[in-house]
Amino acid sequence: MDLQDLYQQTLLDHGKRPRNFGPLPEATHRAEGYNPMCGDEVRLALLVEGDVVREARFEGCGCAISQASASMMTQAVKGQTVVHARELFDRFHAVVVRGEDEASDDDLGPLDCLTGVRQYPNRIKCATLAWHALKDALEGERA
Ligand code: ZN
Image (tube, rainbow, N blue to C red; front, side):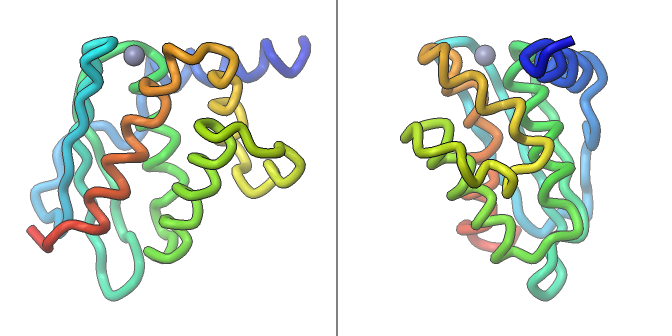
């Protein structure tokens, strides 16, 4: 199995069985994202205490990439500081959207497999939807 297959399997697995899927009534921050190109929807809810993202959950529907991306994103930011969550967004955005060097992709850990969407420009919005919701949620007013 080559790396590409492994990435694809991880994506499909998250797409089929998204982690952190469901409502978060105690959320302090919320944001929604919609990708009209594909019909993907993501509603993100965060519970931020002090400067730590204690809980991250999402609801939504759409293609496997958008839901897998939201699933992985919530896993990646849960338990992290707000500063680190923002850094992850910047890093992810730099690699996927601006096509920056992959040399320091290590920073992205399991999110690495999402960077493969760079090869499919019309799917990039699917992969970044949840991340923009993350950014909006962190920048928005407290709910
Ligand atoms: Zn999509």
